[in-house]
Amino acid sequence: MPESKKRQEKFERFWKLIQNRAEKEESRFFMECGEGREFETDEMFGEDISGWLVPGDQADDFNKEWRKEVPHLDAWADCVCIAEWTRSGDQIDVHFMRY
Image (cartoon, rainbow, N blue to C red; front, side, top):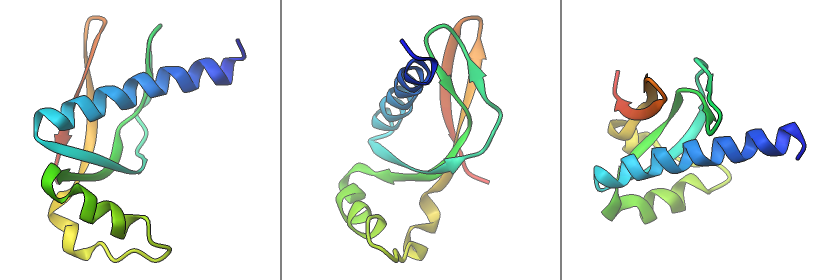
């Protein structure tokens, strides 16, 4: 398997971890961009990711605005956060931090 395909699969596992963590908070995470602080294990690849942690009952409304060519996301400023990863041994976890 090409290295880029393998890394993509590792990132998809990390993305699933982020969304599972968001679900535990009855929310959905929408990615803006990577913030660095990369990690890689045999199973996952990722980095801290900025975006919006939107309550589940508002996710469809946010998604409609987010997908517009020129989105207006000021009303969602309270949802802005960074999905930060932590590592304990071989275990990777994610926490949403607001600054």
